Length: 323
Image (cartoon, rainbow, N blue to C red; front, side):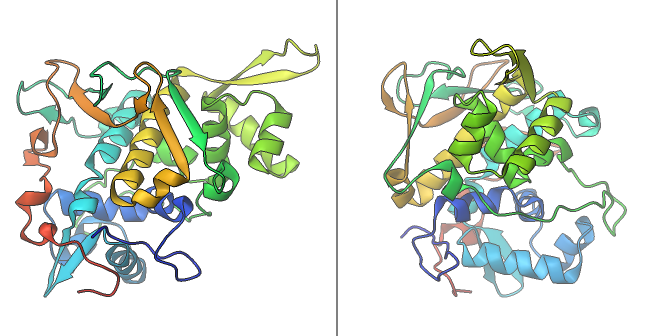
């Protein structure tokens, strides 16, 4: 049985927005990160994260209801769906290390099979070819669309040091984009073909004043670049920069994760690899040795990120309310 996320109406058939909402909430991902790195008890999570008891309790409850973690006795552990988030976390981490102002301060992930610093490359599981930006087609079903499938607004954490005194591994510049629903909408729109102000306004249903602000901020941050429009001399086109193009891997992995564990989302959105015309399923490979990267082959600060079978509780597929 697949894990289930309940939407605002209480339906177990959650929208894509509900699922993506789990991935653009920085606190939720930090909790999952700590669980993947070995924390099991509430007190360990609270000691390692600069988080209040109220926020931690609410995130643990939400993640358990979502089927992403399971709570047994005094221990928390990721389910298979939760463990399946490690590629998303790795992609965010890699982007922050490459493009973030403080990226050099993040721990260096290493591939245990070759010992090299891990730079993940994406390839198609069907044809084995590298997945290149621009060779991926995204098509919405009748009930889909970015305007109805983007997560709501979230508050972002600000503290960087946990109660134990350790620095938390934040990815602040990633969340400057994905943590704001309108910034996320604009970047996704730009990645998949929107160029003019009118395109964003109509296609994403963004209020003009908000859109103007987001376009300005994303241009200043180097996520978008402006070029004179071929249509009119006083118009501008907004194009994704290499920084934005590399964020596409995060979006594709997030969509793949949703489709893997909540199959009904495949009816809302279809992602196809143009080179082989197959539904896209991504595999990550090591840029140094070419081998497929697994959760068990990623080492960070002498810690191996466990795959589902490494956790006794991870074999369960809980439904909301189980504990």
